[in-house]
Image (cartoon, rainbow, N blue to C red; front, side, top):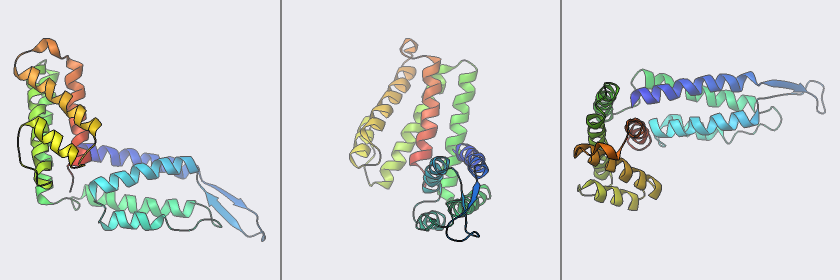
Length: 223
């Protein structure tokens, strides 16, 4: 999971550079000295939404990083252009990236949990790459069920069978009905693999399963 977050930080850093490259300065207005500097609005919005989401997932909405990001949104840029606002967003984003890379954003529990999940999913990928599709699906399914148990703990929901926990978490608003259905589908692959029903799934199903579980952990299992 940490690797997934690191990859996302790197992707958005590159995208931020692309936004900055669209900078244009114009002169005009009542005074000849008036200048406004802007970056492409669509590129900025696209990057900002993704960066805000990443900060929410990793830092939490009560963090200094996220709150500072939100404050910047209130800046007025009518006269000077949106470049100044973008630069402020980027400073906060890079500060969060630096803190993440140096290990300052996660609780000990989250770090240990992330490392365990990373290790298990790496094992699943290794088995998959060596042709052991069923074993890979079973291990990935264990990671998914363990993640649901953790989410139940956070929501004060009793542990139970995967389907029951899944339904209760959706009911509590932890995730939506669409995600509930996807988890059910992933659990079906795990169950088929565990019972040796290899004709009910393919290698690509297991590849997609592991990728979806990685994304699920990134979206729902950060403090």
